[in-house]
Image (cartoon, rainbow, N blue to C red; front, side, top):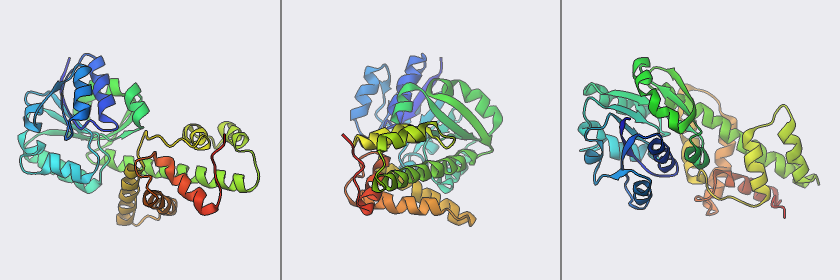
Length: 296
């Protein structure tokens, strides 16, 4: 049994906490808003009034925060995690953030001799709740091995990608694929609808071909049902595509599919759908194409 501090109980964090508790770990939680804390406590966690109180005595500190600004505030700000955590703790950042902010975290931890893994996760609310996330980590192999047991309750697979920073870079590579597949699904459904094809039959074909995708299988029927209930909010997708564009630009890599996806993400946010699922970008694409994809 490991003593864990978990910071951030948003879309992903609360599910991870519940799975850590189910695996008999001791978990103390902190969150900037109070509502999810009560649910975590009901599941067996202990609430802390501050970051410093949450991490006191923790073997491992894990956090899943929404963006660069949140990490800067919680980790790197005055009195933040990097300055108050005990040097014996292992720190695991599960957030999707820029490589630059992740590097700043590592510098702050290294200055105090604190072991750190960048370990962002693939998946959304459903995978977080079921313990089926896919984790990509960067850091020292010995630290990764020591922390591996806390990844098991929250993930389907865990991949050590290389030294520090490798996890956050892999996360942006993977998110490029996600954005591109959502865009491709929207384009194909809009084209099929305009061409007079039966959209449920189109999805039947997409499900069995050699270009099939779990994203198509999950998002396609929801789009036809006009269901954009959030498992991963569009506003977070907007943040992610911006990170990908900045990352790629810094390396001189062309990412035309992400540029196109960003256009429709921005249009969907402007339409007031920021709290809906990331797949709402497809609604914006369909609207521009003059077609409705809802069936039934």
